[in-house]
Each structure stands twice: as structure tokens, then as C-alpha cells.
Image (cartoon, rainbow, N blue to C red; front, side, top):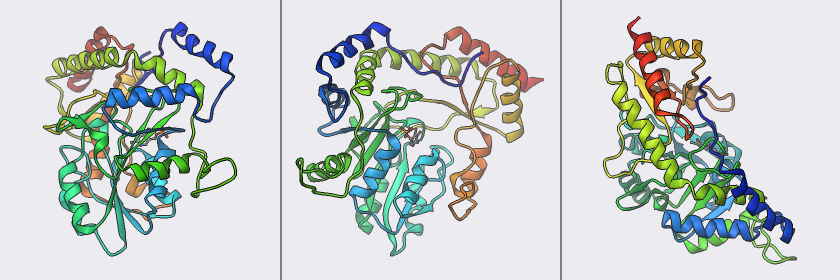
Length: 360
Ligand SMILES: *Cc1c(COP(=O)(O)O)cnc(C)c1O
């Protein structure tokens, strides 16, 4: 059996070494020494001035919307994980969907301005598969119309653009450190901003709004993460280069072996670096994609329609809206298995099977 993904696990001893320290200190959560160490090391790894380690990527999105005090309409992408939209609704705002670009699969920046009204307060865009959005155009539009920008960078760990971290863009960026993501702390997330006063506010929001043991500065939530999660993040951080290299090798294996397949890959930003978070293919038509998916599943190889269906017409709490490019792409897209333990031989096998299924 080959699953779509498999979480990376460090050698058990590496994790246990951190546990020994936790048992000695008996400090389990509430921004303990491991959580602080993880934040420090991630800042160095990602070349960022500020970041906060939080509960998960979804809470990170909710904290971002809350800290920016957003109301009204938020322009967003229908081609993302459900948390991108649900966090907008959860915070009492209204998602306004703008269609995606058929090559990058990110929100189509040329269509954003037409969707702006006097109710619009922000843009929440996802760097799909770690492929940077058109951050320059989005920034220009936001400045012109006085809108805030939040980037859902759940897929974008380690990606750089124009020589700096993708997380430096927007007012706030978030990342997910969930077990299925390329780098993880079992459950976890990051909130990133360049703005020191916004960071301070986010730190209050993460900790119930506490400003000392008996006073409060903000409306807060419990956005903290534990020492056990930080330990996994720290243990995994030593393997980040190995993970990157392995995923690159596997991706190149698919590229080389899938030449005859009637499918294309998303077009990645010319100025962005690649983190090989996913291997997504856009098939020429849905029936070929389904044939391939079912054919692989028959041999116990599991793929995933990520993202399908469109968030704009599948959520019971959102007024349905059809979007030409998104609806078309979502029907034809399929992600292939990609994880650290996958072998080059398995990639060759999957590729061979795919071509055989297509040509049968
Ligand atoms: C995984 C993911 C999230 C949610 O992150 P969690 O850490 O699982 O809460 C949000 N957006 C996107 C695009 C994701 O892939």
C-alpha cells in the first residue's frame, strides 16, 4: 500500500532526549523553554524577525483576522483547504470568492479589483502547494484600496521569493505545522508579521489577552502550544534539509517518468524557490483523472483530489457561487503520493502504472 502522505518521524531517541528535559523541568506548556527555543530556531531557519508558535494553522488564521480587527467582506480564494474560508466565517466576516489563475492555481490578482466594494476590508490568499501568489500585484491593490492582506502559507514552509521568506509578505502570514505538512510539530502553526506592535497584540491574543497575572490587554483565546509539540518541532528541524532533498529527488523522478501523461503541473512563480510540498497534476479532462485515480487505488496506491470541490460551491454556510476556472481545475486536479519515506522506485512504479492506465 502506498498512501498519499505519511508523517515524517525523527529517530525516537531524538524526541526522547527532549522528553527527558520536560520531565526534569515539569514545565509542560504555557510558552516553556522548548517552545521559545523552537521560535528562536525557526526565526533563524526562515530568516524572519518575528514569529509566534501557536496551536495550529486554523487558529493562526483566526488570530490573524482578529488581530487585524477585520469586519465585513474578505476577498479570498475558493481553491484552498476549508480552513481558509471557515476561519473567515468563524470570525464573523463574509468570504468573497475571486476566481483563480489557471496556471498558478492561486487567486487571480487581475480579478481582485472588480470584487472590491466599500465593505471589503482584506484579502486572504493561499500560496497553493507552496507556490507564491502574485504578491507584488496583491500588495499594490491592497495599498490602493486600503485593505489588509493575510497569506495562508500553510503549504509554504521554507519558500523564498525575491530573496526573502514568503512569510514576509502581507500584514500577517500563517503557516501550518500539522503532521501531514512537509515540516511539522504534530499539531502546530505559526503566525508571522513584520510589524512589532501587531506582533505584541498577537502575543496577547495567543494567551487569553493576559497582560500580567491579573490584567488584560486584549480579547484573547488559547492559541498556545505545548512543550511536547515544540519537542517534535525541534527534533524534526534537524532533518529539514534531508526532507527537502528527498522531496526534490522524488519530484524530479515523477517529472522524468511522467512525460507521456496527458496532464500538466501548476506553473510556479518565476522568482520563488520550490519546497516540493505536493505533487499536483492537472489532467486534460476529468474522466482521465478519475480513471487514473481509480486505477491506482485498485493497486492500493492512494492519491487525493486536493482541492476538490471548490470552496465557493460546497460549504453549507456559504452562498454557492460558480467560478469558471476554479470549477474546471478542481475537477481535473490530483495529488500523487509524496513523502519522505517514499522511494524513487515507488515513484517509478506509480509513474509506469499511470501511463499504463491512461493508455489502456
Ligand atoms: C493544513 C491547512 C490549513 C490548516 O492548518 P491546521 O494546522 O491543520 O489547522 C489551512 N490552510 C491550508 C491551505 C492548509 O493546507
